Length: 137
Length: 161
Image 1 (cartoon, one colour):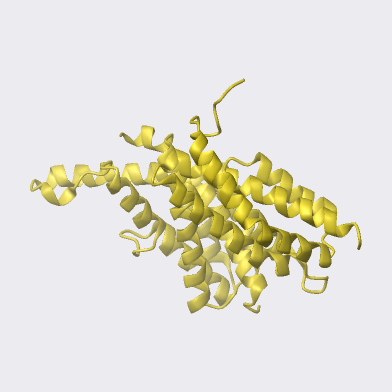
Image 2: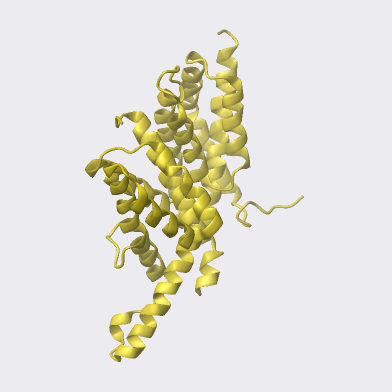
């Protein structure tokens, strides 16, 4: 099995553990966002679309841009969903980005890798909770 | 590190992901602070122009739009964009200035002020300009993505047409 990552370097077990710890601590906020998405009745395909993009991208800012774009293209005459969840999503991702920078300690390889790792962990938390909450809707 | 090594480096990837995004967002907000909002359809042609013709393709589009647009606010937008992307020397937050600052950080641009001979200085200026434009060409598709998405988001949040 290859131990290469998207940036060609491998994070140390200690940093991987710290990243997991950041995600554990962040879980309540992710759940709150998942609940908000379910309450607003975001379509499952849209949540899955976000999840797929976060899993596939090699650039963290592509995730932010996807969310901004989703909010930006909603028509005013239709129900606003992304316009309500984009703000909290962007804030949460920007918080995780800062955490990745702290943990990366100025190393660009590690910072890029940690940003993506945290974003992927985050989207799994958010979408899983959204799906769970959507069961009752 | 030379210019080609920089373009393929993780440092450039980080720059495109972080500083370039912040720069594009600042530029959008600067535009919205001082100008009327324009319809987002005005922005739709930019990614294709960059993909097809790079920096020159975008320059051609902007110059064309500056001339042909009949609405004043659209003309102001394209003029603003021209200044941000192509004016020399650009404003502090222009794309050119941000890339130049990044290249200075890695000692890729050489200091023109240290050269006393006028001809040699002009030669160095030209070389530095070529290096900046090479990076601009690589950064531009991502810059436009950041710019457009932030613009769509900001106008959706509140700036009325």
